Amino acid sequence: MNRRNKTIAIGATAAAVLIGGAGAAIAGTGVAEDALENEKPITGPALPQAERAALDHTGQGTVSGTEVGDEESYYEVEVTLDDGSETDVQLDRSFNVVGQEAETGAESGDGN
Image (cartoon, rainbow, N blue to C red; front, side, top):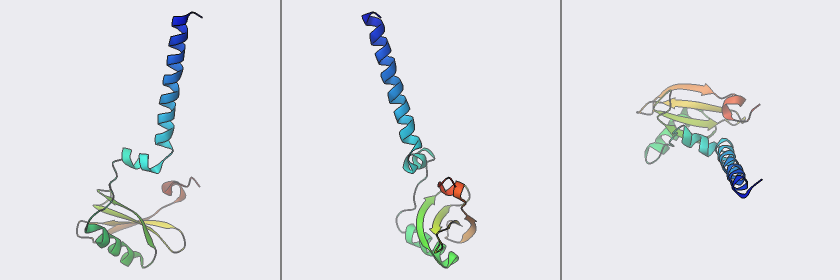
């Protein structure tokens, strides 16, 4: 193989490794997936109001995630219940509960 062909082969291999590594980094982290889906957490004074509304509705558990502008409602609060299961509580702009959905293993990301 001449020098020019070796340089091209090395460059192509390096590019493939970089592209493959970037794809694996995106696929391997929940944070990158959230960023790709444009999920934004609830912040500011709305956060404690949303948490309180969701926990009042479920009657138990701890808040494990939040989102503004969810596809089903204005706010979404993920609650991990005392038994370890998870549920998403959907809230409108006034923090009224408009829905609730239990998460299954496939939706919560554990793959089981």
